[in-house]
Length: 317
Image (cartoon, rainbow, N blue to C red; front, top):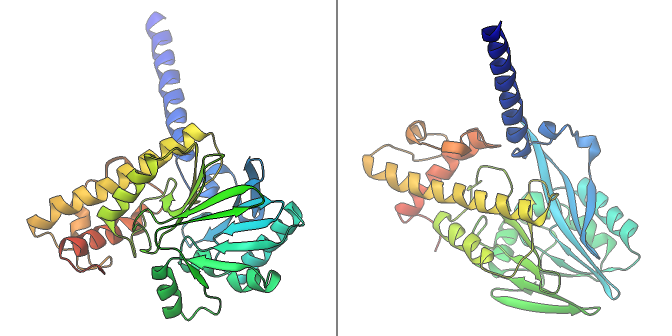
């Protein structure tokens, strides 16, 4: 009988451990389905600190759905918006959300990432707020011109610019190249909120289609030396405590570091990875705890190919 009781207890313990591990895996997933959410649950937004809102809408792929995020800063002299969602339908929803939050007009639209899922909604934003000033880095302006975007920034920030609106200081910073090469961050020193856009993709395998791996790692670490309480990602959920958001930022930094170290380990062996679609080296990579991260199947060979290109000196200067 004692042996039977011990066996039952052991099985129960194993089951509880398995359930706990599954819950932990889901908590670390950027896939909305793992959190019992559906596209119909979006867009949604929440107030991080007074008058500063994290806004989430969906980016739907054949395999999973995760969030694309914007930041809405409200002052008594107008609104500052960071990143504009990925198409005009979602841009319209973003405009409607701003109008629900405040009657103040949009004064500044900051393009922190120039990728389509962050600028596709800009024509609707521009139509709704024709007097708003659009800001990006020079690199992002060049990219958007190449994309033949109909709405382009008219003011550029390549180092630092401080906006003062309604008594709120809003710093636009270029901390270094990362996901796009034109990456900007927005920092509110009074409330210690930093929106990192695609420099920080929470609980996703690092998506490096246009990234600069070694510089990206340095940019992430530079951000973490600053006096920040709230690190807000460009993809992945914006909810959670400051400690949880920071812990996942540290974890994402480790994933970027792993891409770099695996590239440096595999490249000298001759294991080939000329492109993301032709990357036999990926089968030899040890992605450790990130092997099952959201988007890992597609992004791991892409990241490895990008790291090989960096080693070979083939990335843009």
